[in-house]
Image (cartoon, rainbow, N blue to C red; front, side):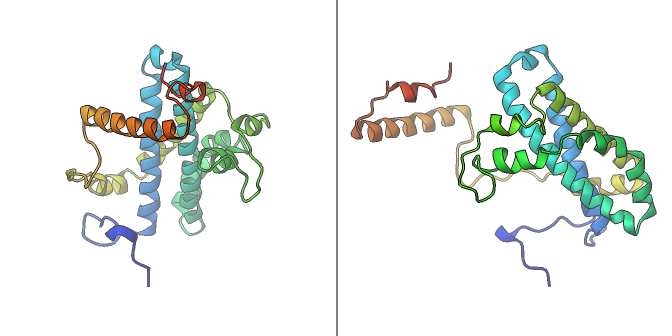
Length: 227
């Protein structure tokens, strides 16, 4: 028996009311990752101003890297169905050039695991490993332009896959409808509320650090002031 999911979470049902098949689950995972890649790619390349903002590109590049790794995992899961489904084998072979392009970077998953998803550490080894040390191995992309090419591979591979299974995908689209948002149990919801909460926490931090002999003008603290 499948164990219960946490927090009362339940998988959406097929529009007919039945449980989703494993094929449908894996197809939907690819679709959502393609959607994430599409949003990030299109919003980043929309204006020259965004492409010129190196600080913004740094964060978008890191998030893009995570999307790419998750997509490769979802694609591998979907492609494993080719053992029993000839249509999966057919589309996988047709789109293999996209996956080959992503796999030109053998360190993608390691960089995600060691740097982006965890605390600059390789597994349980105690050494501090900063991002530039791993980037210097030449196994991961370091330029935003390259990450955008890889994101384009993700979104277009997803689009091609979904178009190949167009009838199945269209039948599943109700599963992707986001229900009306319910009020959050806590947390701020507006910019004004966020400003007030940040100010409250900042005052608390100043009081705590002053008690430890560190003033709010300390040069290390000032490193984290937004320019």
